[in-house]
Length: 298
Image (cartoon, rainbow, N blue to C red; front, side, top):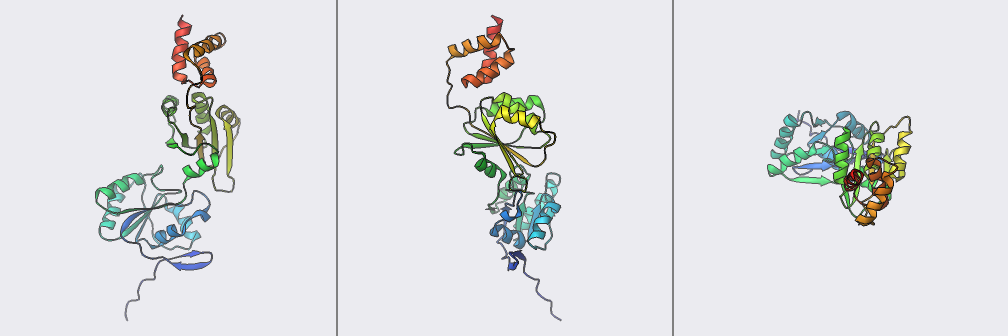
């Protein structure tokens, strides 16, 4: 009795079963939906179904995607806790002529996930790395925010520690483009309060549960958004925050700033006076705070 050839990999799309061609040996970075599974691309399905190895952050999460499109295959966990051992095995697979598909739990690999390390190892080994584009929470939020999109900076997650968070926001305040952050629901109120203090004159957009059933986008001045989220009893879902760029140039001279600070210092402490002066003048809050201390000392 002769051995039967192994069935070719397949996936189902619109109730039709389709064959998945075998990809050439390489490391494939496959973008997956950030919420709505209908956002998967045809090319992504072919690579996910047809690659010799499928590496993913969480097999339970990726398993739901496979089930939706009737893809039957084994998965290899690859995450920050096993990257040191799993990474070399995946690199060796490509070196021996196999194809490896890397997916994150949602969106494009390497954006706030451990895939960067694997890509560096593959490139150092002289292997081919192929991007398979698709959904990205960063670009989706930027497009929906209504804020300038000609230049932007993705800053990932802010620190949970108040001092480190404030220092990071102070540094990012000089970036000449829209700022984009990821944030957890249990930290969003505190982060928005810090953002409003650092950038009191800027607009923002808080994008929650993008592409999902309860997608909600809040837009407005950062102090307003901070107040709205501080008053919410329960916040759920994945969140992306966009913040408008800094003013192109200061609208007040040093003399004007001194006059404004002098008036504010009669009613406020230097910290609050600097914050309000920054909103009125467009000058950096840190510089205004130092000047407020000098004026108060006099």
